[in-house]
Image (cartoon, rainbow, N blue to C red; front, side, top):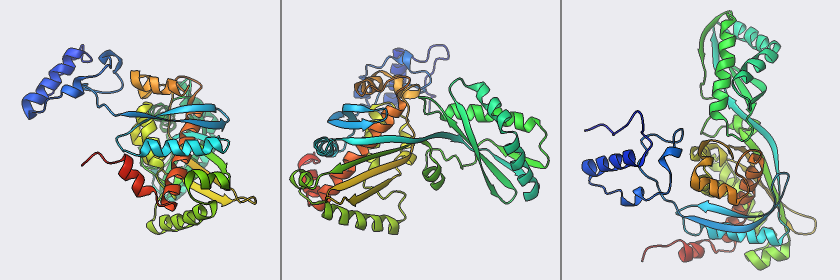
Length: 389
C-alpha cells in the first residue's frame, strides 16, 4: 500500500490535507466529505497533530447558568459540553438549576502537582538507600538543575518509593497554566542527567519513566498525593428544593449513596461516584484538553450527609484533574472559543477552569443520582436519548 502523503517543507496545508483524503478514498473507498468541512487553519496545527486530513465534528451543547462561589471561579457560567450522548447536557443542566436555586457551589483547589518518576536500580538495597539519602541532601541543587529548562515549572519536592534494590524518585512540579507533562519530562530528564554525572555508587540502571508517574491511567498514588489539580466542589441543597425539583428527599438520596458506596467497594471501583467521566470528557473535548487524561481525572470521591436541619450536603473531590488553559490544544480555534465562553482562556486561568470542571461534575452527580432514586432515569433517556424508531 502507498505511504501517506507528506511534504517535509509544507505539510500543514489545505493541499496536503486534501492529498491524504484522496489517498483514503483511493485505498478504502471512503469519501471524507464531512471530515473535510472544517474551519481549522492547517497552519495553526504544528505541535498538535501529524498527517492532518480533516476534523471530527462533535456536537456542543450548553448547560447553565451554573452559579459558582470559588477561590478562582466566581459568578455564573454557561458550560459548553461536547458529546454525542443524548440526555447528558439536559441532566447537567438540571443539576445546575438545582444548585443555582440552592445558592450555588463552593469550589476549592487544594493541591497542585505534576509528576515524572524515574527509577534508579542499584547493586543492592543498601546502596539504593544511600542514594535516597544523597538525593534528600542534594535537593536544592537538583531543584536548580530541573528548573533550568523551564521558566514556568517549579520543582516542589521529590517523593521516594523503594522496592528491592530499586528506588523511584517522584518529581512533583507546579506548571502554571499548562498541564505540564512534557514540561516536567524535560525538566526531570535534565536533573537526572546531572545526577548521573555525579557517578552514583552502585548504580546499575536508570529509566526516565517506569509507570509510577502515573500518566493517563488511574493509580492510588495519584488519588492520595495528587496529579494535576486536587479540587473540591460542595453544596447544600434544602430539603424542600430537593423534593420540588428532583422528586426525592435528602433521606432517600443519602440512603442510595450508601448502597452506591457498597457497590463501588464490592466492584473494586476507583471511584464511588456515578459518572465523573461524562462531564469531564464533554468539557475536555470542547475546551481543548488532552482527552486521554480522563483516565486519571475521572477517578474521584463523593461524600454526603444530612445536615441538622434536614438538608442535603454533597461534595465531589477530584484528586487528579489534569487541565490547562494555555498551550496544547487550548489555542485551537473552536477550543479557544469554548474556553473564552468560560472566561478561562490563557494565562492565570487554570485554577478557575479546574473549579468549573469540578462544579460541573457535582451537578451531574446530583442529577443522575436523583433520577435513579425518583425512577426517572430510564424515562429521561427514552425521551432525550433515543435517535432510533
